[in-house]
Figure 1 (cartoon, rainbow over the protein chains, first blue to last red):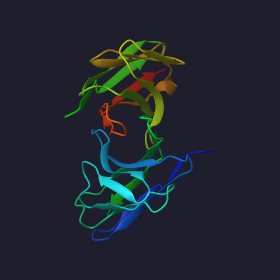
Figure 2: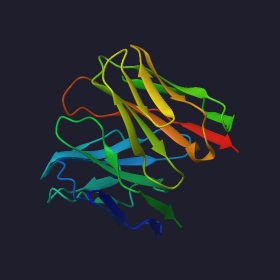
Figure 3: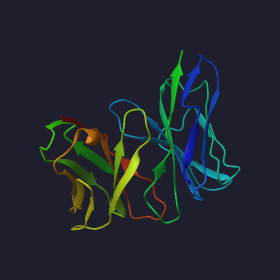
Length: 112
Length: 111
């Protein structure tokens, strides 16, 4: 079955640590996205990538970094510079010229 | 700046009590409007895409409609399993442009 997988489902981080969230898709989609979801707020775009080896900052990129070395994979690193990283992180992808994005199951990150 | 406002923030219905969820948008042209369903602790599930005013899409008890300023998600005779948060998003006309999401409407259907 085609889809998007995210791991881990839950992640705990100590202050000052960098952590990396995994996102993999087998839908053969070119574009991939990372969103952050906080209670009472809409999805906010962190980074996105339209093609391998290229990515752009979204609306809240500070304190985050990404890479896109393979079409299938778009990992997100939450660095120690992100002051309030506790949130639900969602990865999405879509096909070229298609607006609808398909989402993974999410990773809940908690800072201890 | 593109804006999406969803109302009400929360809606409680009795099983079988039909209602509508509203998504108002401000965007410089519309490439597409999208509805998603999100269950607690899970990723959003794609429901519908609407492209132009007057368009309607249906799926089971859900029907989505679109005007030039807003979209409605009509829920007919809802069941408890329809309880979820419903998200609306818009995409401006440029190819590969980003989506802007509303904050969502939390629907609770009591048996």
